[in-house]
Image 1 (cartoon, each protein chain N blue to C red):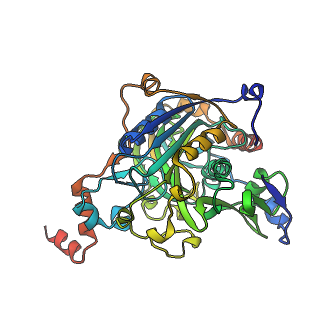
Image 2: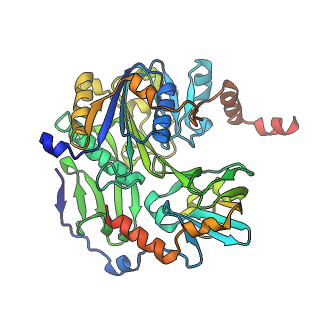
Image 3: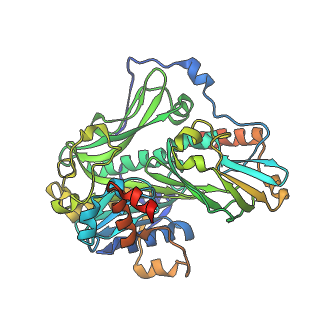
Length: 152
Length: 312
């Protein structure tokens, strides 16, 4: 049986209103909650603020080897948080040309606190820029997250 | 949830129940990973005892930090690194394993994220152990939620959400909400540990239950650096307990299957059924660590090792 109970603590409603998962305007997003930033033929990939918020503190990141071929929608690595490994899926196809070595130390310091900047995970030499059309822009992704959370 | 009428159960997703006895833990883990990644069915795997004492670490486990390596190597204890997260256990014929492999939409309101899955599994096993001994869900850790997630998750802003015996699952304070990640305990002694792996569309949640164990085997494990507060720095023999002191082996397995009946249409499957739906080639990520790896890890903990390595 589950019981709800009131208590003496009060909520900070101001904090509640301000606390919304961040999206960045110029990025593209996958429904599996990864982002990609494209600069010419180079793509930087990471997990979104929504993902890191739901996953919890990241304690380990399994990174691919340099030169690994990644395919849009398929797993290339994993994060560990809260006794769970969670796949990281590539939003683009191509070849891994760089991995974020900072993640080998204390990944939570970057992935959870700066998922779109210092918390980037891999850089990919793009195979097909046309695949970006399969991804969502910031507004569409934000709406997708709201709908997904509302379902549960 | 109480018993459902047959007609209500017709709307529930199917779950294939396959039972083993004495399956080696490496084989079990390989099977689990294969079923997770290459099938689209829901599975419950019950392995009533592994075949031999084996250390099983999570994906990021470091042998030098977690194991008494000299004894592990000296006694030829196998060490496995599994594909799921979480901590280190030592398993043997006294360990009962229950594994759930589900599609992400299989259980209503459960999102494919760790705390959502563990919140549900905590409720499932609460149904299994209710009324047995002084069973409790104890806090293994707190996972901070943003207030936004708190409001999304909870129907209204209660401050505490309880499972049975008034054990809180959610706590809310002025600034943060926390979900409490449960250990399964009798009194303050743990008898089950769990871990998970989550893919794009599926997840696995597996639990090892200490039906019985050899005290001696616990001495292969070091005290972990990350431990729940209620552990109070107790060593393994003071921290864990045996389920056999509380209920019969068969009763536990039967009650677990009965609890699953409230969420799934559980149907028995044979090992042949399992084999028929597996793909021929699959690259497992669970692996047995080599003796060389363990010896290298052991050497790394000894003083003067770095200087010796540098001179080679």
